[in-house]
Length: 348
Ligand SMILES: [Zn+2]
Ligand SMILES: [Zn+2]
Image (cartoon, rainbow, N blue to C red; front, top):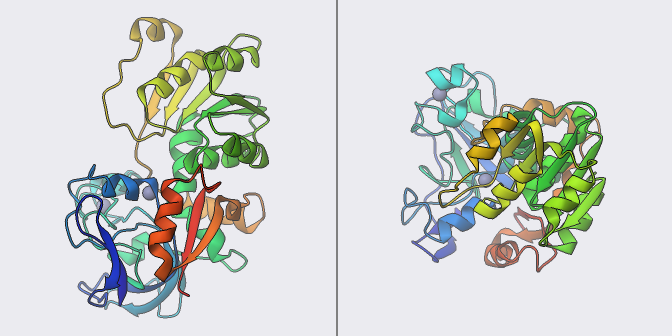
C-alpha cells in the first residue's frame, strides 16, 4: 500500500510500505477513504515530537471502511463505515474508566498513538488497535467530509475549550486564535447558549470565517485587543476565554480578558513556559484549565452533525488526492496565506 512516511525533521515521502495487517485479536484494518492533516503533524515534521521516529506513517484522523477484523472484535464487521479518532482507548485501564482515554495506560500512557507511537492514517489502510472501544460508526446522513473533523479538531475545541471552560447560557466567550481548533470552539460554543462569541485573530480571512461559524463579534489583534474585548462586555471581561494558539502572549491576553470568577480554557499547544500573573489572578477567582482531548464527545457531535446543528463540513476548505499529499501539506502549512482551514485528502 501507499502511505506518507516520516523520515526525520523536514523529511517525508508518499510511497510504498507493507500493507496494514491484523496483529492482535482486538485490531481491525480500515481502508482510509478520507484523512486530513493536523497542526501536530507540522510539529512532528519540525522535529518537535522526538517520540516519532524515522519510518513512522503520519496522521491521526480518518474515515473509512473496515476491511478486516481480529478474532476478538464483537462490535464491528467488515464493510462498516467508521470514524478513526485521534485517541485510542483500551476501555479498561484506570484512565479509560475515568473517561480520560487521553492517558490510556494500555496503549502507551497516552491515547494519541496514531502517527506517533504506531503507524497512522495518512495511508491507504491503517491498523486500528482496541477497535471495539475506539472506533465510531458513522451514521447515515453524515458525510466523510463532515465526519473527518470529528476525529480531532472539533472535539478538541469542544471538550478542551467549551466544556472545560464551563460555558453557560448567556455567557460572553472570547476565542483567542481562529485557526481550525479555535473555529471548532466557535462552532460549538453556541450549543451551550453563549450570548456573545468574540473571535480574536490577526488574520482577516480567519475572522471572516469566525463570523460565518457563529461568532457575533470579531477583534483584530493589535495593541488594544484586550481593551476592545473588554469594551464589548461593559468593561467587566468575558466569562470564558478560550486560548487556541499556544504562545505566552496569547495566553496572557486571554487571561487579561476574563472577569472575576471566569475561566481561561487553554487549548493551545505550548512549547515554552508561560509566566502567569498569579498575584492578580488569585484574588479574581480565575480558573485555568488545559488538556489533551479525550474525544469522548464524538457520539454527541456525530448526532449534532447528523441533525444539522453543526455544519462540520465548513472546516474543509481544500480537497486533495492521496498522490497530492505534498501539495496538501504545503497548503496546510501556510493555511492562513492560502485561505485554508483544514484540508480533505481522499484516494483519487
Ligand atoms: Zn491532531
Ligand atoms: Zn485505557
